[in-house]
Image (cartoon, rainbow, N blue to C red; front, side, top):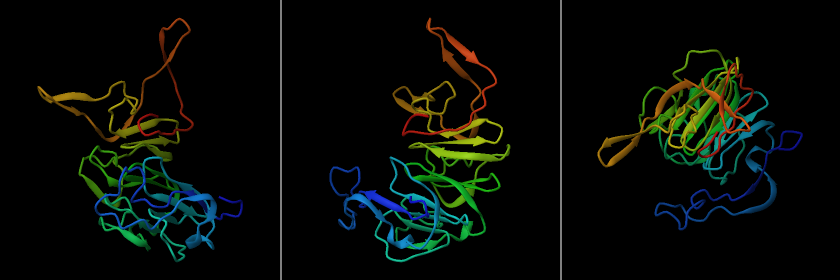
Length: 256
C-alpha cells in the first residue's frame, strides 16, 4: 500500500491455476496474468485502504477502507469500484460470506456485515476471520476442521457467524491453513481448528484411532485458551513459564 491508501498488487492473478500442476476441469480459463512489478488495483483506485490481509495458502483477499468497510475478493478480474463491504471471486467454501457458494466475478456487497466496522481480518486456506471494533469475531468458509470456531464441524459456513466465545474483547486474529488464533485484550491466546502438527499449542497433535487402521484428529471447534508455555534451558531441560501475556500472534500453514 502507498502512504495515501492506494492498494498495489503484484504476482499471479489467476487463482484457478495457482498451486496446481495442471488446470482443474472447471477452470474458467487463463484470464489472469503475472504482474512482475506493483500495479495499482484499478477497481479500488479511488478508495483509501487502511490495511489488507491475505494468506500463503488461500485464493482470496481482504481489504478494509479508512471508514472500516470490508472488501474481499479472489480473482483479480475486476472492472468497477466500490466503497462498501464487497466480496469477490473464489467462493467454493462460502469464504466470501454471501450465504452461498456461488463464484463471484463481479464485486457484491455483503449484507450480513454492512453495519459493522471491521478493524482486523485473516485468511486461511478456505476460511476467513473478521474482527470488529467491538472486539467481536465473525467467521465464514470451510469448517470441516472446526476452524471457524462456531462449536461444530459443519462443512461450510456461508454467512459470517459470530464465534462461540464469551471472553474479553479480541484484539487480533490470524489463520493458518485449517486453524485459527485469536488474542484477547488481556494477553490470552486462544486457538481452534486442526491440531495435526501441534499448531494449536495444546501439547498434542490430536491423533486418535477411529478403528484399528483409521486415524483421525480431535479438532477443536471453539476457541480454547493456551495455558502452557515452556522454554528450554541451555542444559536441555524444559522449564514451564508462568504468567505469559501474549502481545501478538502470526500463523504459517501448519505452525504458530
